[in-house]
Amino acid sequence: MKLNCVIIDDEYLAIEVLKVYCAQVETLSVEQTFKKPGEALEWLQKNKTDILFLDIEMPKLNGFEVLAGLERPPIVILTTAYQHFAVKAFDLEMLDYLVKPIEFERFEKAVNRAAEYIALRKEGEEEENDGHLLIKSDYKLSKVPFNSIQYIEGLGEYVKIYTPDKTFITLAAIKDLEQSLPEKGFVRIHKSYIVAIKSIISYSKTEVKITGNIKLPVGRVFKNSFIEALK
Image (cartoon, rainbow, N blue to C red):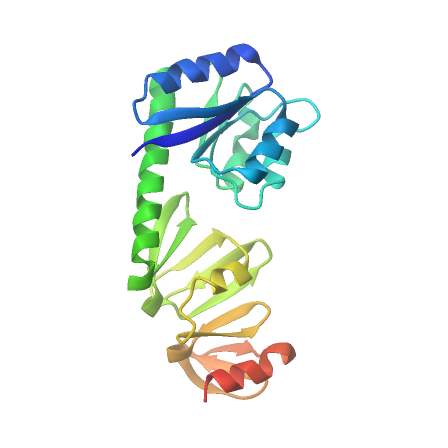
């Protein structure tokens, strides 16, 4: 599987090193390189790529600001001379973090991780109709069977997916996740909650009780559509 990548770094030599490394990986193809992050952001808003090698400390726009401007960023591998950005990078669930000067073996390991991630994501998308939700949680890709989900809680930029065995936390908006669920199996009851219909034990116009004696509120805006979905 051939993977396209984009390199963003304000240092010419840093770009050249990554280009040389990319040339040594048969499955990797450099699609674009950018020294100016503003130009890179404009290109990425209009085009797709598989992997983004992204420097952090750059003039006018830093790497985090570039990412903030992308609705659906590609897989990101940060390349930086500063280790203190690592915590923020992992908080944002970026795939990997390479500290300059970057050794080829470490670069290759990051690319292999990206290739495995992309392959698993593609497999999950192909199997989505077979009953799985594909999410990134705990820095890895996980398949969550639809029939194991009890309910989903939205927490701003994150969601919690509750199953009998485990709770998954992933970076996503609840409205986006809602679109990936089978319409007949789940119902939105509140701006912060989606419930699996099979988990509902009892309900009223203001509250839902689900398996495990869990009680969740029914939002006023969702009341009518919720009652209609259960008919």
